[in-house]
Image (cartoon, rainbow, N blue to C red; front, top):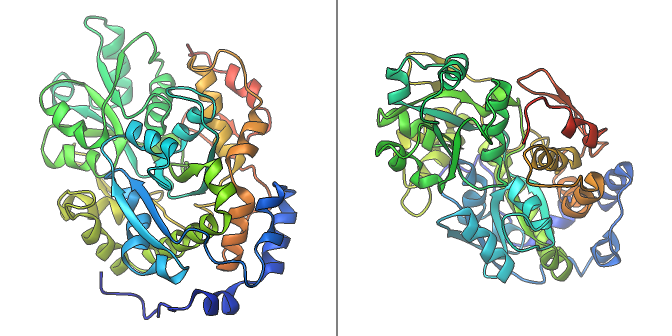
Length: 426
């Protein structure tokens, strides 16, 4: 990547902080949210002369997906050094592997599935570990792909899929990437909105993202939900088509997050804050121009990162979609990385939504204390400090409202009632 938008990387992080950090602004944003935290994490610990990262060399994991872009840019284009960090990006093979390496400390932090962090917090699909969501990395940009064989059988949309399932016969097989992950929840929600119960009407399996296309090619599944570029790659290889994008299920939905353990932020709060700042700055850079997006697509296409042709990554990265059925469009809710921080704030309501779906689909037998779990996991105070330092907006509430594909509104106000309100559930 050569275009830096005429931005000069300040080699002295302390000089940068003197120029750009307004602690009063950060404190005001935090106070507006009514947030509190252990003394070790409060703003008082972030004082002049003590703001340097306690750990300067960080190993941060990622899965080869388009939405790892801001992490890769931060690690390779000088944004880490700007905040006193050396960031080593570590390409991982599966989400389970990311979880395990976070738990053991082999990874300091990671590009990770939102729902996986909450699953780990509650001891679902792995050992219980207190986790921390530092920021959102992106919204939107995933897809549900159906096979060429289904298309040949006359299934090209959700209604036709529902009719196909109602006819009976051998149950269809759908793949997602992790039991408590985002892709599982988008797939289940979409099927449920069609009148298909994902727990009983179809089979579901777990497949790592880079292996989705190869498994569909050999007939191991009839459909899958995964992050880009693997939906686009299925079209490129002519083995499937996009039945729906996840932004059609929930416009501007939360997706990957920057995750770590609670122990890490308690031991290294300044390093955690600096990492948030580096990735926020990189996220803002990516969205500064189409040329920056294109250069980022070229960067992450390399073998060390996503390892996919740039012509597969770039179009959807630029919001140019085609579905493999002859339709093309400019997507109003394509993958977003910053949008003045609205993408990145770790809303409590976003985290609670995943908990409601865990309850809906039987992953949780009893209702959790939704708001308490979200407050434990989502590090809104650390985020507010970092975002205010970069003069990015900090929302006035940890809750937001959204309308999903079935017309149901989610605003986080009554999660227990919401979780029980669905006609189709486990």
